[in-house]
Amino acid sequence: VAPIAGAISFTDYQPSAAGYYIVEKGSDGFDYFFAHCQKGSTVVTPGMAVLAGQQLCNVGATRDASGPHLHFEAWVGGWRVDANSYPIDPLPQLKSWDTGIAAG
Image (cartoon, rainbow, N blue to C red; front, side, top):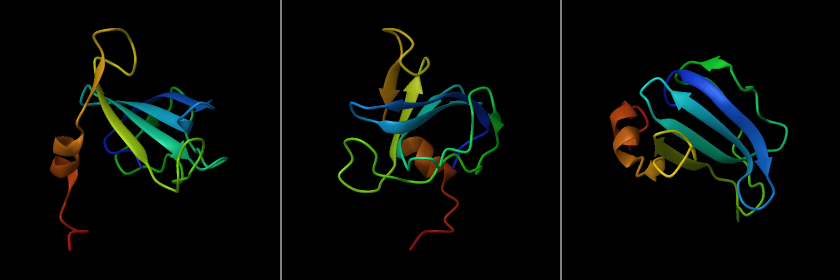
């Protein structure tokens, strides 16, 4: 699901690693990358606005995944835009979004 409101920048397939993937430009200025989506499960298209919690795709194991999982990245300066864009540790964002409902 979309972690935050934003717009979908890319949906594509990378045969060398990510498999089916989605990139969201978040309203918070970060780009979010979701990889290894299940084939045929992507329900968003480039340019589509999304709300926090909106379904993007199903977790899969496409390409170099050893089992079903979500590969998630947060990027500063856009996703792979130029030498000034780079991924950061998404843990602070994940913790800030945690409502505690699933804690346990």
